[in-house]
Image (cartoon, rainbow, N blue to C red; front, side, top):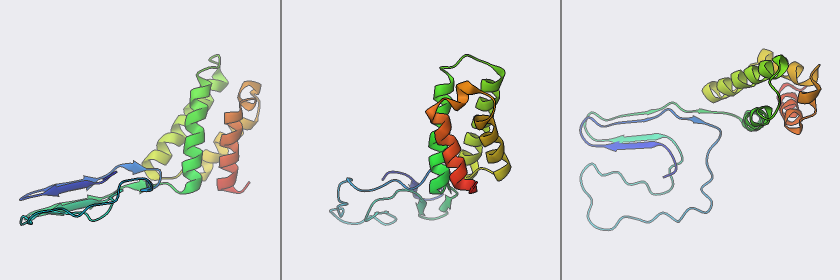
Length: 155
């Protein structure tokens, strides 16, 4: 099991509210094996790999799956934003660097929370990274963020 939640028994509850950046690959995981021995009433057996979701079994059980998954473009943007934020720590603290980091943090939080970033926020981020500050525009990681934003917005 690489994610999700499983609960069994009276009053059991299972929740998966994790924010996702896409499903995890199951390639390379060991093949699932059938359990040996007799079955117990209320027993849950997953015949495969669970990479998300929620399972509950038994009286009064409840299952909830409320994960948010970002599309590929937003996952790539999120990865680029996180790398650029790491690189900004290497620069001298200036008003422009602080402003860019604040906007990057807002984009990161929005994608993590909702799976995407709004077009207005993306336009502002692109503007911050392409005008005025030579320290920012010289970073390859800033160019990667701009490229990801451009791919999402088409312009």
